[in-house]
Image (cartoon, rainbow, N blue to C red; front, top):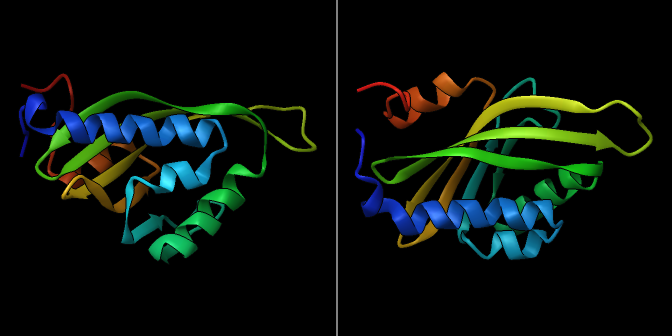
Length: 142
C-alpha cells in the first residue's frame, strides 16, 4: 500500500539520518533511531547474513560490517513510504581495508517503524524484492 509521503515524512527523515550516521561511522548515533527490541535481518548471501535482535546485537552487527570499510559510503538514492515502512534504495560504493578495488552496488533496505522508531531493519539484494515485501509499488509505477 502506497502511503502519501507527508504521512511518513518524519520516518523518511529518520531513515536518511541512519545512513548519515553509518557513513560517519557513528553506529551508536544510528542506533538511537531504533527501538531497543528492534530486529535486523541480513539475507543469505550477504557477508553477515542472519537475524540480530536488540540494540547490543544490532550495534555489534553494524559496527562489524562498517568496520571493514577503508573508505566509501552507503547512500540513499530514493525513499518510498509504504504503510509503516520506508523502502530505501541504496547505492554502496566502498573500499575494504587491505583492498584496492571498490565494491559498487545497488540494493534496498526496508525500515519498519512504530512510534517513530525502527522496529525492523531488513536488507534485500534486489530492490523489487524490497518493494514486494513492503507492499510498495516501483517509484515510476502509477
